[in-house]
Length: 243
Image (cartoon, rainbow, N blue to C red; front, side, top):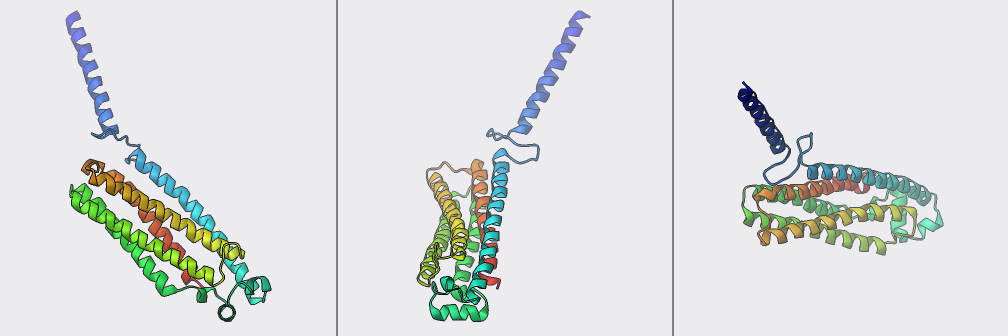
C-alpha cells in the first residue's frame, strides 16, 4: 500500500510538471518570444503602445496648426503688415482674395509625393510576405524599394521647404510658419527614422541574419511604416486640401 501511495504521488508530480511545461510552451514560442494575455508578443504590444503615444503627439501638432492657420488668415485678411510683408505681394493678394493658404502650395507636386509614400506601404507588405515565406531575395528587393520610395518623399519635402522659404514662409516669421514646419518636419523625421530601420533590416538580410523565424521584426517595422503613411494622409488632407 505504501509503495502504491508513493507511486501515485510520483504520477501526480509528473502530471503537474507536464502541465507546467505546457504552460511555458504556450507563453513562449520556439524562439523564446514571450506572449501577453492578449495573444500578441511583448514586442508587438510595445509597438502598439508607442504608436498610440505618437497619435497623441501628432494630434497636438495638428491642433496647433489649425489654430495658427486661422489666426494667420485673420491677420492676413485684416492687412496686418507684419504678416503681409513676409510674403510676395502677388501671393499675398491671391491668398487674401481666396481667404486661404492654398495658393502657397503646389498641390499636384505634393499629391505625387503622397502617392509615392503610399506605394511604399505596398512594398513593405510584400517585404513582410517574402520573409515569412523564406524568399530572402524578394525580401531584400522590397525592403530596398520601400527605403527608396521613402527617400524620394523626403527629397520632395526638402524641395517644398526650400520653395516655401523663398516665398516668405519661414519658421520664425510667424506662428503659422512655425506650426507648419513643426508638423510636417516632425513627420519627415519619422519617415527618416523609418528609412534607417529599413536599411538596418536590409543589412541584416544581406548578412543572412533575417530569416523566416524573425519575420515579426519586419512586421514591427512595417507597423511603424504604415502608421507614418496613415498620418501623412491625414496631414496632407488637413494642410493641403482643406480650405
